[in-house]
Length: 132
Image (cartoon, rainbow, N blue to C red; front, side, top):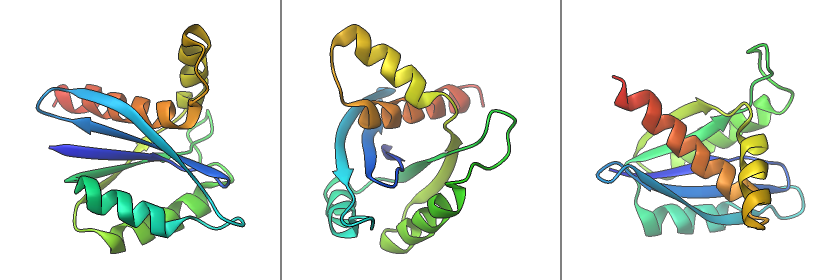
């Protein structure tokens, strides 16, 4: 199954892709928002190109498990995504994914933090779903 993950941010959105047949994932790109608005044209183009069966969106929770301040914007993003493409959609807890991505990238001298955070979302989904 083809998977796309989005790590939503107000300025940019990290994107990664994954494949359940190989249980692999890769950071893909960063989509920059335009004038504070989501770049839906680029997202729609990307979804049509990859034709995923599952779309994962990082759920920004506080460390105590409550919704973070950005959660309302992420909910709107999630609902709009669902209207663009027929696929299965899931949230996945994204606590510490950006921190983990920064650690990995510091070791590799790379600055693609948002796309790598999205990659970690897919890896976390793999881990959760392998145990089922």
